[in-house]
Image 1 (tube, rainbow, N blue to C red):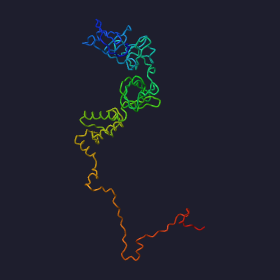
Image 2: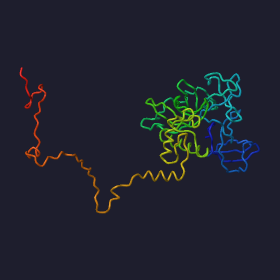
Image 3: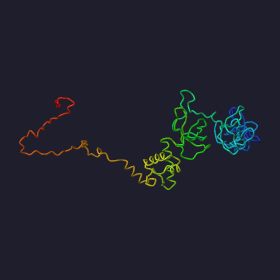
Image 4: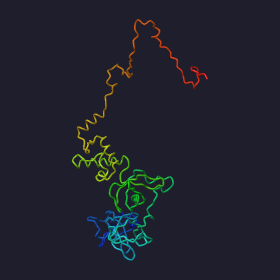
Length: 359
């Protein structure tokens, strides 16, 4: 069955003066008007088309690609408003209708709004700004025992939907709400913008914290590639290093200073760059070879020993100067065994060698 609001791959069944009739596996047919028919299409060919309802609520096909499909959200501009609702431009000849009942605030012509595409009780495609009816707060498993949909570091598609005191609310994969905190935003974003993002954290309440940068090692890998490309594009040098202001780093790469330092450290360990006082530069082939040779470290003492010779691991003995006794000493016993000294201990702890005080 052909569902309005989605793409379908259909077969050309018949050619008529008004266009091509396409059919699915069940034999259901739909018209593709002549203005959308690609050149060279013959009976039996397959086409991917978008199905929607025309002005008379009949199924119609188009090869045009709308800005949004059924069960998706997008930012669309209002073309017109009448007494029944607003009409939004979604890239098709017939505009997307948003009834007044589906508007959280009255729409105005020329303004853009984040809307979700759904269908009414007659099957007609409509838009709505009442997003909470369709976007979930908690990203949890659909049934007990199933895996949660996201883990930290997962790449996702975001639609920036709303500005808040702590940052931005974003729609994740057209299904869940997530939050981009101000501390995670290092480049300009706006409401209505579509972008890639990452799951920074799945909280205990199953709500999502988001990031515009990859997480952990993924972030360093991605940023390292961008830094290398920037170095190549700028002739091999870049006036940024660990001591550069955070604002300057954010302006060039849209990341935090901490992320930049991690990426630079990774490139330095890989011998790709040289860190200088005023910035960084690409390492030459000679510098790479020299660095790799130096990494080999000192030679192993055991390996360099001649055959048959064991390595001597003993510590050198400490020699202390002793005062020699004169040869004409009268008492030889005094030099052979030192006298035992008498030790007087603190009288408060009685013992065998304690000197007791008389009262």
